Image 1 (tube, rainbow, N blue to C red):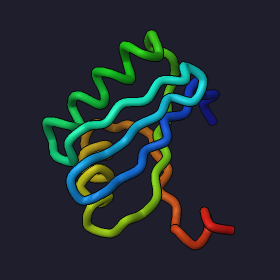
Image 2 (cartoon, rainbow, N blue to C red):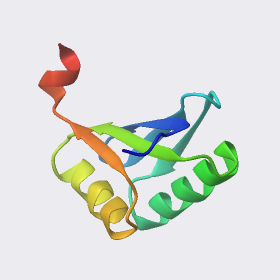
Image 3 (cartoon, rainbow, N blue to C red):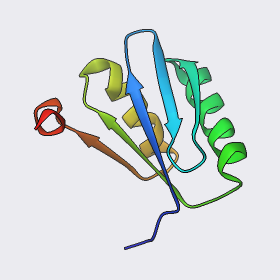
Image 4 (spheres, rainbow, N blue to C red):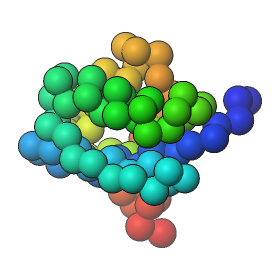
Length: 88
């Protein structure tokens, strides 16, 4: 298993995605569409200075499915957790 230097937590809603880089301690909001996903990846790369990164977000159904499909298509590592598991 690869060691990651940065975790990006993402809150997915209908219109926006909010991202927070844990170690870099920076936050930014993006539009929840392909343009926003591209901007997110570019911002994370700049904010983390090329560190090994993985993304974590809550499964919000259709809203998070689009993000998951995009990250998969770019071969980017992510974890999508059930809301029940996060709540516990």
